Image (cartoon, rainbow, N blue to C red; front, side):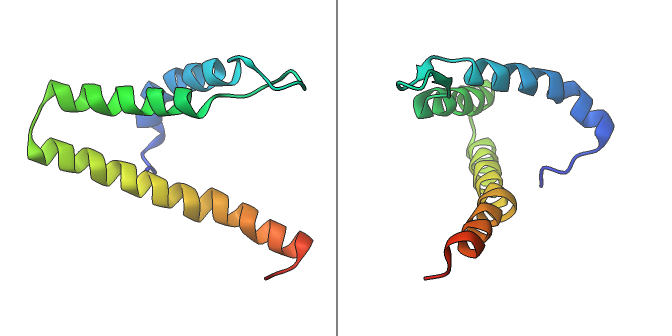
Length: 96
């Protein structure tokens, strides 16, 4: 569950903002010159974090915890963000 206390967030939020800013200031995207991150860059950032966490303490338990956190983060992103967008588009464009 990503809903940690405010004082715990203060340790991570500046670093997260820096990473997001770096991703969004990547290479201009297509002919529109809009800035957008590359899927590979996002994958690199996520993979680097979890690989370093695993390499620091290589065990099945640690690997299993990392996989569980990634899966829960994926599901929470879908539940809170992507499904909202899908529901908005259903209202705009009609259902199946």
